[in-house]
Amino acid sequence: MPEKLDKSQVIGLPEGAAIQFIKDKWYVFFAYCYRLGEKRYQERDYIGTIKDNEFVPNDYYIDHHPDRKHRPLKNWKNPEKAKIERAKAERALQSAKIVQNQPKDFARNEPFELSVGASALLMQSLYNSGMVEDLGKAALNGNVSLTTHCVNLALHTAVTQKATYLASAESCAIKFVGKGCLTSQRASELHQKLGSIDGLEFNLGKARGLRLSKGDLLALDGTRVDCSSDNISLAEVGKRKDGTYGKQLNFSVLFNATTGHCLSYRLYSGNCPDNLTMSDFRQLWTGMGIPEKKVVIVVDRGYYSADEFAKLDSDGIGFIAGAKTNLKAVREVIEEHNSEFYEAKNLLRNRGCYAVSSRYSIGSRQDPVDLNLFVYRSPVNEMSQTDELYERLDRIEQAWLDGDTDALADNDRVFYKAPVPGEPLVRDEEQITQYCYTLGYFAFSSNVVTDVVTCYDDYSFRNEIEVFFKQQKRNGFHCARVQSEATLKGLALTTFIGTAATIDILHRMRRPTAKTAKGLRNNYTVPELLTKLSRVHLVHSASGEMYLTNVTSREKDIVAALGFPGLLDSAEYVDKLLSVSYLAERLKS
Image (cartoon, rainbow, N blue to C red):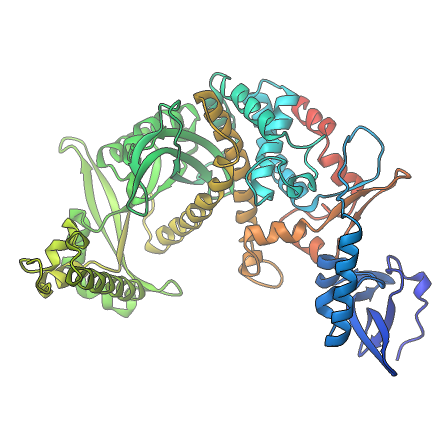
């Protein structure tokens, strides 16, 4: 048992808290004593520990902010006591309204408290990647006000769950750069102004291209965004993932998978296939100086174009491209080397697949381009894809018997022998077997990579970015009404900046830590991590003091693991990081 601890000397100990030494640690708790009839009861809620004579709150205390007088109703274990407390709470709600205090004017020295952990982290990321400087100097001509508002709208897409700017308490409770984020109407006006600037995409992309290092791995991906406005010429009817059709846009972003930094973005019409955008991308990349950096571009099979890839090779741009299994060269490898896909020596350890490499040529006969072809077979995917096929056929056959002749789509008729309405469908097992022959296989081609493991790993990170990117665009493109081409261009810019910050955090979460080789993503998703850090608040007291609350060693360890040690050590630093004056200094330097 250690020496008695003087509670009055413990830094940050909540009023009314008690302490207790258990095993080798001091624990802090609120004791709730009460009487029901003649019986006396006592219950405890543990709220943290004591380390180095300082109170360290646990997640319960951070999430619920309890005190000695007010205990969460669900914590009362005695049903009769809980009933009494519920009645008290209901009476309190009837007698007074709960008003949330919000800062009305940041210029005044009034007391306020705002969530700052997530926005500070993302702002630090944007500064670290050079995005703020490139945006302000190259794209916005050094305009500090435009840059500040653009960055704030970008942060909004990343740290909030709701789409409309400052329409909820969630937005008002977050500290952005300077006086805060614009309201929805002012945001639309800003997007209009941003989109009217000539060369916005190209100038920003060119500045970002200067930050590339030789041999960097770049990932390109596009996603479709619904757009019902009649004023947007790029909004064209296209096919959605669920098979339905609607007016869409194509939003494409180029990422640096080596550093985690976003480089450029483009908007295309909604019915434009990805492979038809390659010609435009080649011109953009040439202007960005990409060929001189000898980088490698990674794209999925939707971008596959033999002619464009031959031109990329001619421009000196390396690539890894997904290839469809119905490509002649891929089918030849599957058929001619089939037994090799079952040999133990061709198993990629810890990756769940077998691999076989080959060579093939694209381009003209007079000037052919030789590429490496990597074909993989995943037994798990093969079985799951076969199960999905048979489950789909089961649904079709049941619907057919129920009289729904439209249930049998044209592309599924090949699996049946002469369908007759009113009679059961008869499967053509030979056709089904032939179709299943290539299930579980996937392939890549490259003009620079020569190793099956390197190709697989390089593409895997691009695939992780693709999934995350498609999730991120939801907030960005749904947080303002778009009624003009200029507003759309401005919205694309702020969405790109917000995506850049979160993609960088995703990349940093992959880095190994002292506790796990998988890094922070072993314990958190990006939204979960940002939610946890959003508990950190910056407080300005009425006396002019400034301090951070809800900062424990856990939050400090998180930002340190992300590469920003000391980010949450000082309220003054966080306040400076989210100030307009600091942003202006960075643009002048």
